[in-house]
Image 1: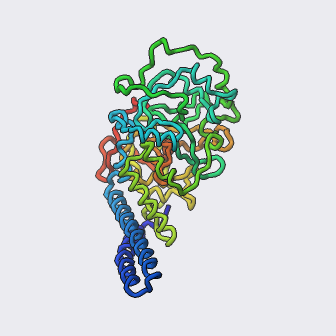
Image 2 (image 1 turned 90 degrees about the horizontal axis):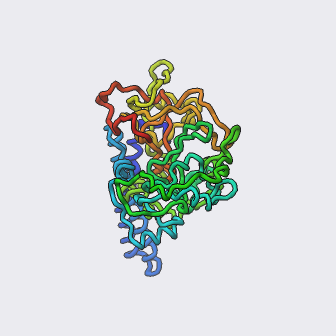
Length: 439
């Protein structure tokens, strides 16, 4: 994440133009190599030149994408990746039917450890069936089935994400893979059995706890017939890690429940598309932006996205105290930059670069966050300065090549300003504000 924003556009254009010039130069070199070099060396040199030209052409496309994204951000329009990935939002998933051929489901079984794809309509098995899969600590393959998930037993939901790629915050700080796991639309942990943790994480569901059923929009979320319901027997197994001072939850166990993966492999490349976590057009935009940023890093250019130059108003900006249902506008990146230190922290809370996509846009406050479980120690932490969750605003995963965790982003009040109801000219409405709708 760059702090030299006034040079951002110039840096993007410079890199794109340089790659554009390289394309004809490399092609001309290929022709000259075939004409002037010996028969053995000439074709090899020409082939290498053509590869350079193709690589440069890809980077030209990447630069063009970044320039479009930069312009959209400057105009206050929705980020291109988020716009192209609208079909993967909960409402769109419920409205559309998944395209799942036999080949795609076979690939899913091979690459993901299950044959569920985004948009599948599933039924969560009963507690008795799920209990049979758990060990003495209430885990399946080291992933806990948490008490907060019991209320969903026997109900139906839509597959929201396949958890093939996640970030290990606890130990390695690297990307990892989890076999046979998905997120479901609307299944968010309320922390009621974990000291009132307010992180609002999506619960993770193993494929062994689910079964695919015939899709029916009017049945989503409806409980199954009473014949399928059963009493909560042997529930004591779920109490492991639910008592202070150290809590255990799915987030603290991600490292134990997952496996390391390499950065470059065809398997990792294909998983997001096979799973349906990302729309094809958004997938292309994400990868091209990633490649452009890699080039920028190597040449010490400005990455995307970048902050605007910090704007200091001559005094310390006070935290805006908000409540659920308040309409707010995310401040400009220049205003936010002025509140951060050199590590992009404000009173200990990191400003995630993914949050730059939302600057200047209008949202609704979902909840105030004061209590969080420390992922490393398992201890409950109380924030001295509260953070806020904005409705339907989550980590897109793009920056980590489509991380599937879909966690909510935490905002300080100083990064937001209360909106009176009508967005100002610089603010662009993204989601409606209905405080009565759950996450």
